[in-house]
Length: 240
Length: 240
DNA sequence: ACGTATGTTTACTCACCGGTAGGATCGCTA
DNA sequence: TAGCGATCCTACCGGTGAGTAAACATACGT
Image 1 (tube, chains in turn yellow, red, green, purple):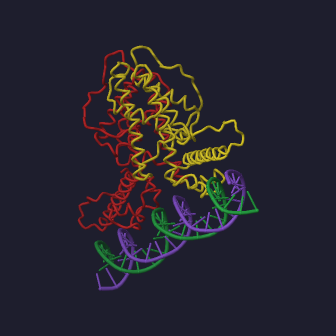
Image 2: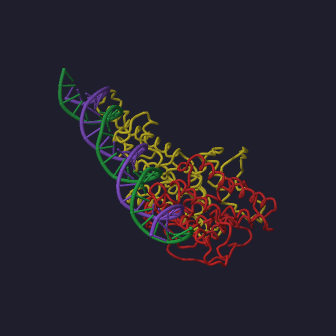
Image 3: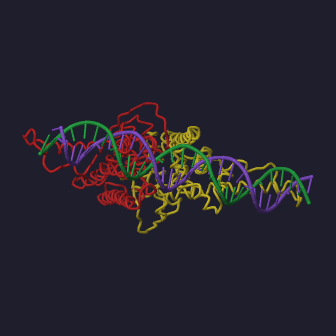
C-alpha cells in the first residue's frame, strides 16, 4: 500500500510499558491501517463495478461504516482513485529502479520489469492503475498520473534500447515495442477478473514467453524460453 | 457505420422524377444518415471525455441540436454506447470472416486480421469498442457485447492454432498469445488520442512487426519482416 | 472528574443528468 | 389550403450521489 508517514519518529517497542507516547503512536498507526483499508476497499469495489458505478456508500458499506467515515480518511472520491493508482504503479516503479543495479543483459532486465508489471496489473490495484484516466481526475492529479506512467514507459524504452545495443534484444522500434508490451500487460486487468485460472505470476511468465519468442517460427528449435506448467482448464473470456 | 436497414426495398433511381415514394425514401435515407451522425458524434464525445463524463447534452451540443432530438434517434445513452461498440467491432468480425477464404499460411491470415483489428481500434469507434464494459451496460447488452468479443477471441485463437499446425507460427499457448495480441492492440485506443504521429494502418503494421519478431534475437539476420517507413517525430505518451 | 482529541454517526444540501411530456414548426400530399 | 406526419423544441421530473454540518461517543491526558 506504499504509504508515506510509515515512520512516526520512534518505534513503539521502547520497553516502557505505559510510555506517554505509546498511545498516540498506536493511534497514528491505527489510523494508517484504517486508511489503507479504505483505499483497499475502494480498489476492490472499483474492480467490481468500475469507478463511476461505485458510490462512496458502496465503499463505506463494504467496510461496514458510513460515508462520512470514509471522508474522515480521504478528501474525495478522486483521491481514492488516485491512491489506488499509486499503490499499483509504485510496484512497477520500484522494479524499474531495482533492475538498474542488476548486471544482466538488457532483455533479462526488461523481463524482470515486465514480470513485476504483469503481477501489479493482476493485483487488486491493477484495475485502478490501468483505468485511472485523465477524464476522471482533476487536471493536477491527471498530470501526476501521466508523469508516473510516462516514467515507466521511458524506463521500458530504455531497457529495450539497451537490450538492442548489447545484442540481447532483436532490433526494433523501441517506442512501438514498449507500447505493445505495456498494452498487452495492461489489458490483463480487463480479463483477470473473469478468468482467474492462473496466478498473476503465472500470467506474467506466460506473457514474457510470448514476447520473447514472437510469432514467426525460429530457426533454432527452441520452443519455450521457460519451462511451462500447463494449467489446462476450459478457459472462457477473450479480447475483452 | 455498419447499419442494418441500409436497403429500403427499391432504389431511388426509378426514372420517375416525382414518384410518390421518392420523398419517403429520401426521408428514410435521411433519417439513417442523421442517426449515424448521432452515433458518430457520441463516439467522438466519448472519446474526448469518457462515457460517464459525457452527457447527452454534450452530444446534442456537438450536433447543434437539443437532447430530445438525440432521443428521437436513439432510445438511451446505453444504446448509444452499444452502437458505437458494434460499429468498431464489426470491422474486425468481417475481417475474421474474409480471412477464412484466403489460402495462406496461418500466420499471414492472422496478421491480416490483426491489421484490421489495429485499424479498428485506432478508428473513432476504437475507444468505445475497447472500453464498453459490462459495468456500463444492461445485462442483456452486456451479454451481447461479451458474445461478440468472445467470437473474435476464438477466431484469433483458432488462427494461432492453425498457424502452429501448418508451421507458420512458433509453438505457443494459443490462449495466452491471443490475450497478449488483443491486449496490445486494444491498448492503442488509450494512447492514440494523444499521440497521432502515425496513422492507424502504420501502427497496425508496426505492431504486427513486433509480434512477428519477438524480443529474442533471431538466428537468421532478418531484422524487420516488413519494409518500414520511419515516421520520426518527438513522440510523447507511454503505457497509458 | 473534566476538558479535549479523535472517530463515527444522522441527517441534510445541492448539482447534475437521464429521460419525458407536450407543443411548435415545416414540408409534403390531397 | 387544410391536414398530417415527421422533426425538433421548451420545460420539466425524479433519482442519484458527492460532499458537509453538526451532534454524539469514546478514550486520552491531566
